[in-house]
Amino acid sequence: MVFSQVMAMLPWWRFRTCVKRYQGDRKIISLTTQEFFKIMAFAQITGRESLSGTALCLNALPSQRYHLGIRCEITKSNLAHANNQRNWKIFFDFAHILIKEVTKLYCNDHIKLDINEGVYALDSTTIDLSLSLFPWAHFRKTKSAIKMHTKINLRGNIPDFILVSTGKMHDVNAMDHIEWEPGCWYVMDRGYLDFERLYHIHQCQSWFVTRSKKNTLYKRVYSRKVDKSKGILCDQKVRLTGTNALKDYPELIRRIKFIDGETGKRLVFLTNNMTVSAETITQVYKNRWHVELFFKWIKQHLCIKRFFGRSDNAVRSQIWIAMGVYLLMLMVKKRLGLEHTAYEILQILSVTILLKEPLFTLFLNDFTLFNNHYNPNQLLLFDL
Picture 1: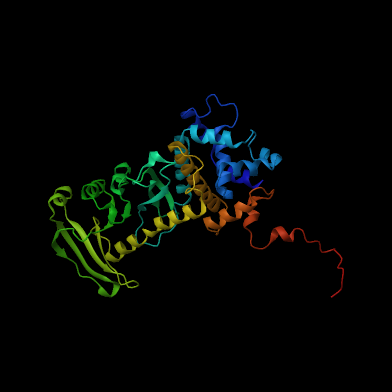
Picture 2: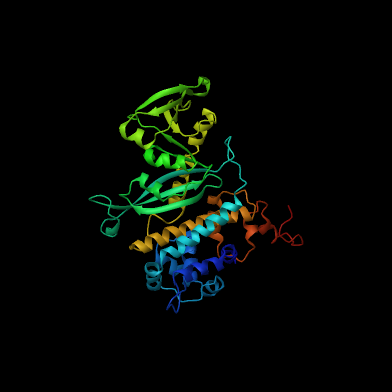
């Protein structure tokens, strides 16, 4: 069965280690954590938006459900209980195991940049919630919200870091939870412009690219020659002169002014890398939009805007299981050597998940599945 073949790609022995770490199956008679994960993965792949709809679909085909590795009785109540009680850290840890697995698969992918080091994009997205249903995620007077602070690896658009917080948490505070890898690039918008934290990135021997704000005070120290035909208006080394900025970032910083030929918009970039070309810096920042595309993808194609439970544990569990499914789509793409996008893979699996066919045949473009049913000895009813 297709679903079983897809699930077989996951390192289940590592999952069971995560379950034991948090005693996820302690005193559990039916609906183990592994079965719960499979059920929730099925819901994400097939686009179910409620626990009752998920239970109804699986109970409609009991024999096939058994071959999916789901042997327990499925009801809305036991799914809701598991969703609220199974520690979300189990799925958090397992997702990070999958991140490492998928990163290895995509480590040789090419990035259209003149640099060989790792490049990461950092941003956040807000998911609006009902204040009456999710009071623990209080955001404003009239609504609740959670934020997903995310760092993605541009090789494969892999979410390397995700921090789920209430909507009140400012973006710059997420930087305190990130481990900066020496020699890697980190690109972010001006919402992350905090010179104390940027200097910490600099001290970690990592490179950052961000945008400057209009009220950023500086003094020019040195200017390089620029090619204005490429949109570079200036390339300077500057010293920050703001009272707090100078204290937080005592060294020189590079300032590049760029005009976008397509939109005519003028952008000012700040970076601590003094060696690469200004054109490369602008291209690095342009690739920041990959994280925006990632947010758009998961909101449109995974169920993370409507939640199966109202507790903090249920929300976090659903988000991390959804991330596991997204990583699984990337894994299927690489291990089968497919040219299909993750969106195409998810859409195909959503309607073929219960078929009894070899997984790779679903992605063939020569209609092999249909040709297998053609009998050349079949007589024609009418001669044409």
